[in-house]
Every structure is written in C-alpha cells, then in structure tokens.
Image (cartoon, rainbow, N blue to C red):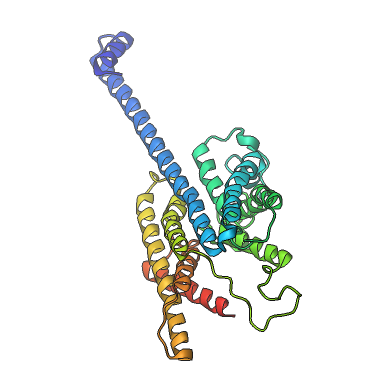
Length: 362
C-alpha cells in the first residue's frame, strides 16, 4: 500500500482529526512493515532449508560413486541401480507413512509422549513442506548407507522392499523417539528421560547408527561375497581373498561429494536460519564439520602408516584408510556439532578416525 493511498484511507476513516490521522497512518505502515518482515523471514528460512535438503540429497551421488568404485567392474551397474532404488523407495515410504510416524502430531500436541506419530499421512495437513523435503533427504541417506554393505549379493526386488520398509517403518520410529517433541528420548519432551533427554543435533545416532545397524544385520543374514573366505568347493581359505574395487578415483570423488553434502546435513539441521542467533550456529557447525573430517583423515592415515612402518620398515600411505577416516570423523561430529568447541571437534574427529582404523584392523 502506497503512502498516498494509506493517507487517503485513513483520512476517510478518521476524518480531519490530526492526531487520529497520524496514529492511523503510523499503525497501517507498521502493520505493512511487519507483514513484509515476516514474509522475508519465511522466504529465507524456506530457501535455506530447501538448499540444505539439496545438499543432503546430493550425498546420494557421493554414496553411489564410493559404491561404484569399491566393487568389481562387472557389478557397477547393479550397485548404481541400488543407490537409485534407495532414493525412490525412500521417497515413497516417507511420503506415505514415514513422515507421519516420525513427526505426526509433534507440533500440535507436544506435551504427550507417544511411540510413533499418528497424523500427516500422505503429506496431509503438513504446513512446512520444506521441512518434509529436508527430512526425506535424511531418510534416503539412512537407507543408502546399507547399499555398499550389500554390494554384489542382493536381489533388486528385495533391496527395493528393504528401502521402502526402512524409510517407512524402521527409521521413522527412531526419529520420533529422539527428534519429535513427543519422543521419549527427546530433549524437547515435556518430561524428558532422566530430566535431560538426548541431544543428537544432526543424526549421528538417528541416521548413521540406524543405517549402520541395519547394514550389520543384513550382512549377517547374507554372509560374505562368494569366494571371499572360501573356495568354490566350500573349503576355508588360509587368508581372505582380496576383492579390491576397480576405481580409487570414483571412491575419492564420492568422499569429497559426501564431505560437501555434510555441510547441508549438519548446518541445515538448524532448520530456521532467521531465528535468534542461528546464523552464528550455522557458521560454527560448518567449522566443526570441517575440523572433524580433517582430524579423522589425518589420524586414520598416520596411525596406519606408523603400523605399516613398524611391521615392514617401509613408509606407505593408504588412501582407502584416509577416505574412510574422513567419513568416520564426519559421522562422529554429527551429533554434537552445534554444542562443542572447535578444539573438541578436532578431538572427536580424531577419535572417530582412530576408532575406525582399529575396527578395520580386527
């Protein structure tokens, strides 16, 4: 509304009373300014969340590159199709019932503790659809963690069923418990567990532990790849047969893509950029993410180098351990990236990289 039209409207409303006219004009302009401010705030928050969701979804590319580079060349197409099915299966499962089980009722009745949500099926009555998109990207990430674990030994129909089941039923239960206001582990619950609840800022437990435990169970069911530990007659080999991936370059590309996507993963978990001092939190989270990844890489690489030098007398640098140490550092910092100091992020990332190496050497 222009200044002239505001004046004319107020003049027609209050007449020639100067004080009333000035009060009317000032009130109208204040209301218009508040409306414009709210619109800008909502627009920036929505753009921020969608951009973060895009970064998180782009991590699917990183997983696909790592998986493709880690398998033998004749299984590349099979592995890439699994990654595509992860995204498709997760979207279907999360759209139908997954989001409802995860967050349904969390915002309308936050005082009640529930096992799963019971509203917002099929996106019905979801007011913040950007938030749905962001959470879908997380669900897809949790599902695709398992893809590399099942490489070269899982049928496509079974894998699609798994993707839908995880994103629709398994993952949402964990999300509801920790991230929903109604979850019994949530720090935002009106009666949190042990009086404090659980803080998992961006999903170390919610996303990565859920995907990792699923991968462990699936691996136990499927067993190792044919020829890995036994010959074609079923006899146990003296040493496991190495099955190196066909492209280290793809693995390295995938690692860098995941690192980039992790900025959306962690920083995007702020959700509302224009609220309070969240812009400072976003910056702090991004820095902690960077430091933890770097510390995990260096720790895993140089511990392995020290071990190899001690055993063989030669100094060698293993790129595979460096890449996995980087990812271990990223996973480790995800839960507390917003609540720890930068020096602590270095320590957390280093512990993550070292822990990965120790487990890998078992």
